[in-house]
Each structure stands twice: as structure tokens, then as C-alpha cells.
Image 1 (cartoon, one colour):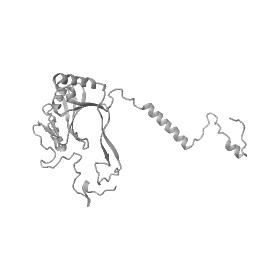
Image 2 (cartoon, rainbow, N blue to C red):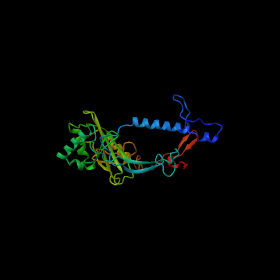
Image 3 (cartoon, rainbow, N blue to C red):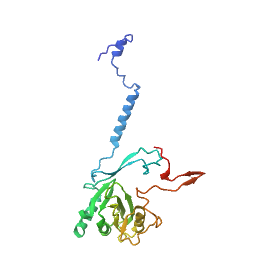
Length: 281
């Protein structure tokens, strides 16, 4: 690089002259592009510095996409006035996790497998898959062996999941052959642990064994799940609707249930039911 001074009167020389480095400590105004590059570099460095470490245990299996939803609130043919009509997102379920699961999860699954293999139907026959996702343990159980698995989870001294927080339902219309899920959350007061038990059944035959004989607190929860999702709990002492009238058609929390509703009067104006409102798309 030449250190010769540049004649300001010579525009050609001035244009060709290289940019000179300012003295140390002197402030130089950067262009907007340069400032943005510095900011982005700093943000990326901070993200890399504070990013959570990759999990070393409980590796997640393949993600199963069961549906692709568009819009919001389930509105498909109109009535979505929220402004989110262009929203598109996948409905994905985590696949089976790989060992080691981490923490106490391995111990609990090992104990359950040992008991089921020794005096029950066998772990592979009773458990479809073990999922560790977001720090939570879920056992996917075959419907035929649900009672036996719950009995072991409750009674084995190394497990002792003696408390059920209730039963709920989930409806995945596009998960062919497994559209309805019954979900139960269990707590071990003895060991200070909790896990989830999940059973999937087809819409054409939505039958799950009742667990009231193992967890009596599930009595009204199973009635509510039947009422809202249509899952039939075989062996329940008095399976009947608990929220809707006895002659109510359908099950309101299923995703194929119509929005429905009644007109609402508000200060002289009438708001039509959700499925009769005008569309803005």
C-alpha cells in the first residue's frame, strides 16, 4: 500500500486511493449495513453461548405427522374472523425414545418390564412404545393390557404410582386406526414421581378397559371422557353422561363435531352462531 499523500485536486487519484485506517481510539461512523452485520454477529454469538446443550439421554425417535392444520379454531369453510386464516402448522407426535432415557425413567421402565415379563403378558406385548419428551415420561399401553399395567404401576414397591390425577381424551381425526386417545396422569406420592399412561383406539371401535377398579378416582373422569369424546370404558360401574343431557347427540370435544351455537343478543345487535358468521377470506 502506498503511503504517498493524495492530491485532493486530482479526482482520479482521490477515487483510486485506498481507504486509510483511522488512528486507534478515534470513533468512525459505520454504515447501516455494517452496523447490522455487527448486531447480527453479536446476536448469533450470544445465542451460541447461551444455547442449551443437546440432550445426552432419552434420544427422540422419528416424529409422526398426523395432520396439517390451516387457519385457526378449526374453521375450514368460513367463519374464521380472527385474521389467522393463513396459518399452516403440522400436528406431530413424538416417536419412541431410545435408551438411556435419563434420570429415574430407566429404573422405572426396567422394573415395569421385569414384573410384566415374569408374571404378566410381557413388556413388549403390553407396552407399544416409551416416549420421553420435554422431560416427561409417557407409556403407550395396548388397550387389552391396560388394567394389568396400572396394577403393577400402583402396587409394585419400586414404582408405587398410587394416585391418578384423572382421565382425559384427545381426538386425532387423521391418525388412521388410532383416532381416539385416552390419557391418564399418575403420581407416585411415595417416590415423588409422575408419568403419563396413554391408550389409543380406533374411532370404529372406541373401547378401553375401565380403570376404576385400580384407581377409584377415575370414576367421574371416565364418565366425562365418554361424554365429550365418545370413548367407551368397558367395566365402568355407571358409564353415563356427566355434563351434557342424556339425549344429547354426539360428543362435543371431538374435532369433527360441528361448531354450532346459538345467536347472542348484545346491546340491540345479534351475533350469529360461529358456523353461520361471515367469512373474510
